[in-house]
Structure formats: C-alpha cells, structure tokens
Length: 239
Image 1 (cartoon, rainbow, N blue to C red):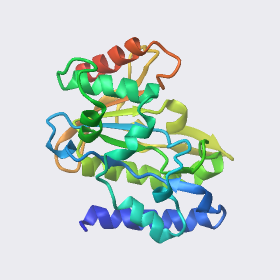
Image 2: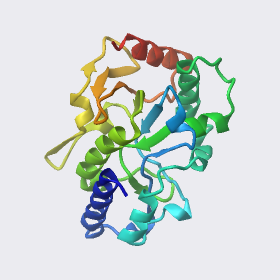
Image 3: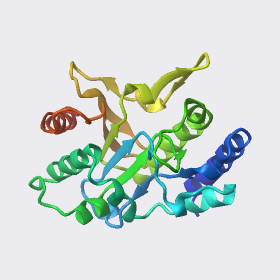
Image 4: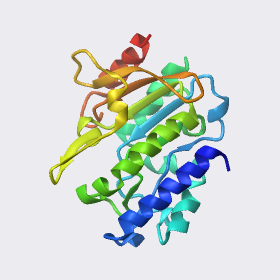
C-alpha cells in the first residue's frame, strides 16, 4: 500500500470511530471514490462527483466495523456499481459530457464503455443503506474527513476533467451554529451568470499536473441539452 493509501485508511478509521460513538452504522453503507478498469489508460480522465449514494443497499458496502469500512475503501477499481444508477439524469448527462469531451458522438458508446473509462465518487462517503440522504448530523460528523478524502482522491486519480454535480448547498452549509465548507470551493473562481454552473477553474494536483474543475447545480428537472452544453462550454473556457 502506498503512502496515500495508508493516509486514506487512517482517515476512514478515524471517521468510523467518531461517527460510531453516536450512530449505529449497521444501517449505513460506505462508497469511496472508484474508477473503471480502463480509466488510467484514457487521454481524457473524466471524474464526476455526486452528493451521496442516496440508498445504496449493496450488501458488500455495509458497515459492521471499522475493518469492514476499510475493506470496502481499499477496492478503488470497480466497474459494476454505476449500472444501478445509470438511468438517472445525473448519469445520462455525465455520459453525454464524457462522450463529447472525448470527441465521440453522443450515445455512440455503450454503458460499459462509459463505466470502465471514468472515475466516480461522492462528497459524503457514508449514507443510509435504504433510499435516503444522510442526515445533517451524519454529514456534519463526516464532513472534515470527507473534505480531506476528496483532496486525496483527486491527487490520486489525477483526472484531466473533474465535474462536481453537487449544488452549492452540499458544498457549503451551516448546522448548529457551525459552518461546513469543502476546500474545493476556494480553489476555483465563481462562474459568470449561469443557471447551471457555479464555479470553474484549473487546480494543481500533487503529481505536478493540473485538473480542469467545473462545479454545477443538479441537472434534475432541467433541460438536459442546456445543462450538457453549459458544462462543456465551461470546461472549454478554462485556460
């Protein structure tokens, strides 16, 4: 295990210890960022970040102990899980954006091509097994760990294009008189007037390279063509 892997394992252990003192985590699952088997070989390394799994329900993601959490966290190469959410607006738009970034015609690639070629993660790693978002309390308890993990995952995965489909209120919010904010917000600039794009810019990663970053509102309930075009334009404008 490399140095970053050891650091991640330590963070997950600390996160489990803190959260399990007040919450029975047997009713929750964990999903660390993952990448497809062909991701590392892509010229366009596309990584997308959502908010949370929102009811994953996968037995092999369940948390019964700190060791079970670490076991799941170590498996970063995995193609199969995206299939369960592939019919959502989130995944439809992500696939279209990836295809056009790579120079393919939209809908010309199979779901398997897409899944194996991208990296995917969430802001919050621990969520209820059933259909629900994590509570404010659970988000607050894991926030600092997830903030650090996101930075490590970006450095580790080295994406050329990073899309955060989260909305502003999941990246920055208040709970019980404390302010929570992901560091990624401070690394990129506010975007010009847009109903879809919140921030965009280029960040330096640990390898010495850089990553184009676009942060957006959620696409649900909006014209998907407009959303896809806006994201691609934002990526194009980043110098």
